[in-house]
Image 1 (cartoon, rainbow over the protein chains, first blue to last red):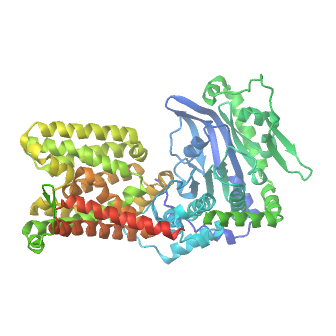
Image 2: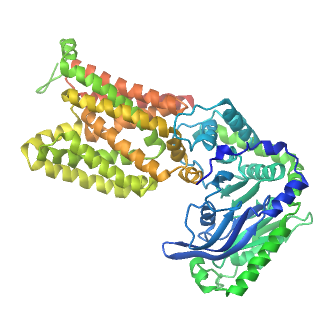
Image 3: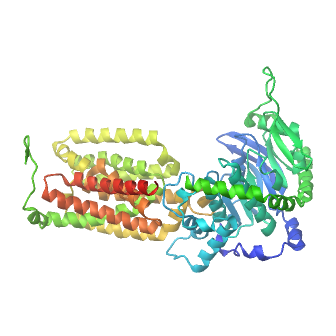
Length: 355
Length: 280
């Protein structure tokens, strides 16, 4: 049975709770997500296999990989929306799909083609009441909860706007507010930065960092582009050679790995400030053939034997324990130290609305 | 005024026509149709199923002419075929209703089949035009009872399933992740849609139904900003179109279906125009 999201404690209460060491200790006990020998098959083709990793609570994790590597598929598997070919996914202690009441899900291109006249507030409220059959007038408490979620993502002043009137960035933040309103412990976002301009991307990143920092939210972000997310990430699941691998951030940022991952040359540059950027490499010689494989064919090429597999799993678990660092805290201060950037962001956002 | 052989003049006896029993029936039927079309029009647009709704009416056509062939009531055959089509489209999922090529092909085939059936008997042939373009003036009291019962059922179901239906219209994946039975919502929506088509076809026919089910809802969406208000306004616009169509067609020699569709389209153009001006 799926749990009703409204039975859970209100989201914003956790915001007022101090981000104490207790919370961190509790977070370490049960990982937010655990994959055990998971493989996914869609219409007789293995998308990826040998998924063995855990994602610690309270972390921000990217799911990266080339187009068609099965990133969105991974989120859907975690939500129990598609069946597993083998293995088991545990989410917040329950098997995938049984704990969805505790997960906020923001799909790709949310309400991107909406033609109805729903306002931002009504959309957010559906995150709270949308599963209820019967006659349920919206209560004042529910409205307050929706307001609180919208305030958190910075769209409170847009609550009476129709979704169709909002820019992509604002609509994305409405979508996040809808996912937050029922008080989830995990937030899953599918390509939240796609089709947004730089300013809007920054706003979303800021909201995610704040959620993680102030509420200890475990966040998973599917993204084909790591650059924007780098400052807030604790780790990444990278879908490479038909297998998902989990690693903490400094391991993922390896030029060779990324080059292999994306099938095009990628460089990692460390600036004097310690920031790292992943950039496309210099123009390749015309006659070189990039090392590109379809993920499905690679899934068949790679077969680990079982001892290898278990070793891998344990190693991943250890890695997961080690991952939690103060990375995201740095990020917030880093972002706060760029007020000019923020100003420009909001200007652009306003400009978009007028257009 | 005389245009060629056609008379196009004001009918001073129009009040007498309006007080006739068949007009009475038409007005009541119009109210029933307006409620059903107004409520479901909103969801049809929200679910991007306008083309599927349009197609359902055409899928119903061979059912209607086939029923005449077999000596069954037109609405019965229409309803059965529309329901069959609705269940198939619904079972295939929300995305299927957006598969325009497949839907369009089935639509064309169904229309052809409707023609084929109609040519197999003279009575079906006679009814063909009524089915294609509506015959609101021939609606019987029995039909009105059917419409009224359908409206009550529709309102009851939509009231109970309102939020999950809306949630799954907004974003099916999120709704599904949160536990809304989106498959059931699809089938439910399409089933009700088949009912609305069956009820609305007698008014304007299978060809013009879009203007009665979708157009008023689109107009209401421009002018309102909550689903409930949109449904209410959509019903009112639909009612104004049908009743206005009846009155004007009593005054002037124009078929009611045409006037109904014309008024509905006029409202929509007006709303679009006002909206465009407001943005400049």
